[in-house]
Length: 353
Picture 1 (cartoon, rainbow, N blue to C red):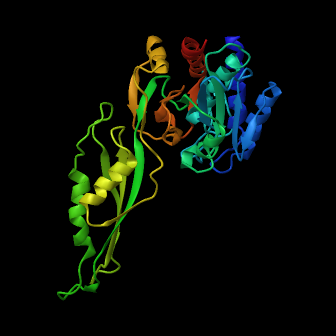
Picture 2: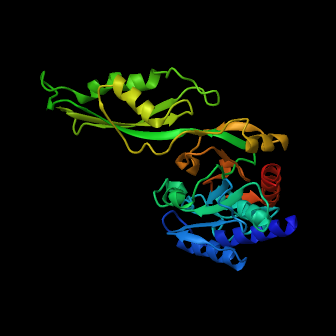
Picture 3: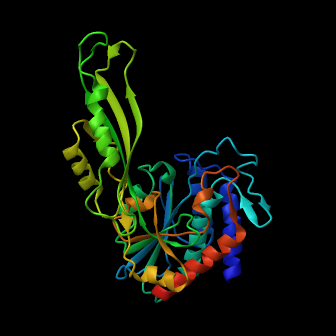
C-alpha cells in the first residue's frame, strides 16, 4: 500500500510540473488536483484556485488537523539549462519547476491524506488544502479559504525541510519610511536636508536590540535595504525614503514591533502589511513529540510561508531541501518523496489512530 501511494504521488508530481502554475495563474494545476481527488471518489471544495477536502468519516464533534501545501510556483530563473516543465527523472532525481518547492511536499501530503481517508474511528478529522499564491503571499490563497475550513486544531504546512521539524518561523514586515525636509540650493545655507534627517533613524534600525529574545531565533533582525533621495547634485533633497526588512521572532506580535519602532524614530513609518506573523508550536505538542520520536530534529525557520497566515499551532515540515527552492534546474530526490509519505503517515499514526 505504501509503495502504491509513493508511485501515485510521483505520477501526480510529474503532472503538476508539466502544468505551468505561476502565482495567480494556477487554474490548470487547481483543476488537475481537483480531478485527481474526484477520481478517487473524494468530494472536493474549490474557491478560486484553492482545493480542499475532508476525510470520509468526518465528524464535526472531533478536532481537525489541517494538511496544507501550495501548488503555485515562481517563474523559472534565467539559469535554467533543462526544460523547467519536462519533469524528467534521471539518476534518482525528478527535475522541474516546483518539484522541490513545494510539489514534493504537496503530493506527499495528498498521499498521506489518501492513507487515512477511508479509516473510521480516527481521533481527529483531516482537512487537506492545496492552495494558491503562496510564493507572493497573496490574498487569494490559504488566507481566502481559512474561514471556510471550520475549526482547526493544528496544522502541518508542507515546505521543504528535509522532513525535520520547523517548530517556529520568523514573521516579516516590510516598512516604507519617509523623512521630509525642505528643498534648497546646495551652495547656500538653504533648506533642510532630508538625508541628514534619516541618518539617526537608520542608525537606530542598525543597532537597536529588542528587550525580549526568542529561545529559537534570538533577536529580531532589522535591515535597511533600499534608500532613495535627491534629484541633482546642487539641490538639497526635501524627501528621503528608505525601506526596512524586519524579521520578527515568536517573542513579539508584528503590531507590537511596529509600535516600538514608531516610538523610537522620527520618520513616518508605514508597513506594507502586518499579516505575515511569526509562528511557533510548543515543543511538547503531540505532533512535535511524534516527530522527535522518529528521529526528526527541531529548528527555527528564517523563511516565511503560509504558516504566517494561521492563528493555530502549526508545524512546517516536508521532503526536499530549502536551499533548492527557486534554483535553476530545481529537483527533488525520488527517495525524498518516499521518505515524506512514510514519515508523515508514521507521525500522524502516533496521534490520530
